[in-house]
Image 1 (tube, rainbow, N blue to C red):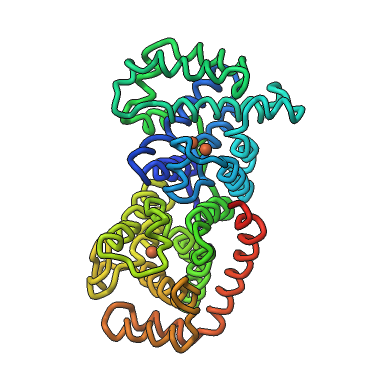
Image 2: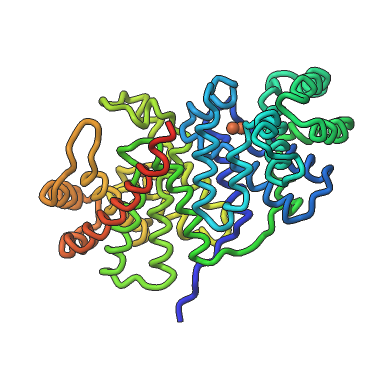
Length: 422
Ligand SMILES: [Fe+2]
Ligand SMILES: [Fe+2]
Ligand SMILES: [Fe+2]
């Protein structure tokens, strides 16, 4: 009997939340600090554990629908004139996973004013309205903090700013909650403390449960979409890599937990691209040396995000070594054949194969001959494992057709639910 995969939910959500804040220096700690203020307000509102957890999960990942660093910065600087698009996209992403779904409505409404709620006939007595108002206040407060000024020198200004939103944007009950929590200096000093994420993690606001494969897969799939939906050209890339890698792994007699891990490694291999701006990631013309260096950091961040999640140890390696080459010419670790596990070599081959088979702004999709020519060329140069390239070549139609079907299904989902939210 194969041991099944289990993944810690709290580790996974905290790690991705912190990673979302890495994309630009102006965003440092935004999700985590917003989550802290949210949890303090929820506690002051005397919500029970389940409701605090729902609200906390929404806050931790509230800007998940602002897919690129540029969009995150726009939302952060109040420059996003149509903030509802990142809210709606975020809410839709939340609805794709069982553990996130109960928080989806709060994400939808995190920039919705109380006036809009009341005009729509909704009341602050509804949990999702109260929750979204709490998140609205927390997000607004966090964005108003001047990062280069000592926090206790800004508290009066910040309090006044929140009071300026009373009535129009934020319900008086929620501003009252804020007035309760914002009195002690302790609140403000904790808010800007460097180890806030660890402090919050230790409060166990999020139950530390182990997800089984299906639950972990549904959340990993949301993070895959967050990574890939930034461009129509890459909208199904990780789905393709996951399915291709799984197909190769089956030929190589992987089974049980190893097959599950190879699929999730495929889903998550590019999650580190969170830190790469769209201007570079989606650039239709040739990258400069400096731009390429920015892209090259993504496997480092993939490793950083995944390696902190209990249950993802193996996946972190397989996913983040996908640009390593057997001759040591890859990145970011410059590992060689002896240091690379077969799972990492499979993801590397699948990544090259799927990338060539996909359409790009500057070229048409590569056909079978083009894909195989590139793969065999790289294996001859000592970059990819010949046995793995052969495993794919010998089963090309079966593996690539299966990957293509999965990509087409995801493309349809992307077009139907996400592409129209511009
Ligand atoms: Fe937002
Ligand atoms: Fe935000
Ligand atoms: Fe990559």
